[in-house]
Image (spheres, each protein chain N blue to C red):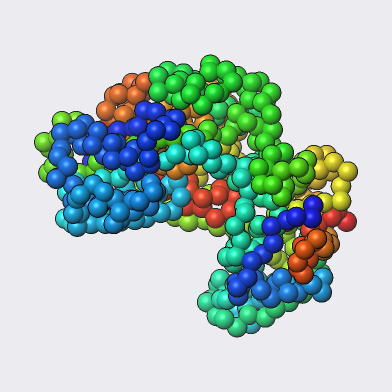
Length: 394
Length: 137
């Protein structure tokens, strides 16, 4: 299939604060949408397509339209967890290619830090659905679900905690070059806002065996917005367009005899790369959902950067740092581990991919031409979605 | 561990499973048309879509597929437990279930992938349902 360049990211904004007690989630969304439109040089009235993950109290496909005072004619409320924004970007690509939309907005706002939402360790308290009734009695936590993937990966492939720690080390290396990430870690009272070593990760306390504190993402406030436009609109925007050239969507869930070390990305990512007409080894920067170290490890394999089971060796020796060769630069904004994770990080994967391909990252890969954003939403060791977007510089 | 969150009803997919725990039975489903093993319980076969599912009683023996020892849970029911082991158990009949591995001195040392386990049923302070847990064989 010949590569299509029908839709592009033309405006971006990441809400800078990760601790924002004095604003609401929907205010974060609206502020970010205006800033992203300004970035593109587009007007409020130009919006004709709304994508919303039904986040931000009072929002949603209807509520956000009403709040903003816009009348979009494409309304998509895909909500599949943290990867919702990769799915929405995929849908925006299709809607724009089909001529149904010209200027699409995706937005996110969350108050997880202010509300002290115990995302990782709150445990399953809800029951009453077919799946929750089988899990609530066992004290499962979100982190433990991911930790079970890590244990199985270690058992089958000999992967070690020291190897997984390389992911935390690389993302912190990038975070320390990003002033917003440094401020985030400061505001959220990280112990030691500095570069870290594998030993630092190993010395941090275990939350759910075998995952250590420094292998877990932060819980922040925050949000952002993305403007995706048709190629006709993109010709006249202020910014260099970042083309969306491939998308893949998939689900994965707990199955009898299923392989927990394989994520939804194994099904969806090849579809995205095939549509884009590129191979993983051509990718300059990889924004991969780092809820936990193991999420990145599994997804690197499933996206085809290395074979299943070989990620431990692949990530060793700092290969994922932006100034190293032999692999894509990983989560160059600092990731969910060290920059921004209010709950649905998929937004930031696209934002940092766009920054890389515009040459604006604080950990810029020289001459970056191709990027991939891969979101994993839900529970890696349970039911989850994988959304893959391949992006290209103008 | 006696204040576990309990299943809530009306919930027709899992009602039979939990009713069977009162008789210390661990049950699963199998499709009468295509023989697919179905778990967790639900209304239709995950292979062919049939609603002709037979309920079967498991022998309750299986293998730890993977696990994690949880050190921190802010849910009050589990907050004061100390370390405890969450695990996926592959039952010999071919279904996988989430549970806890209990009855060990120290879960950090005494639970492992591949370990053989069998079901026990834990009575709760309140409520009629028993909770299926697993202990090493």
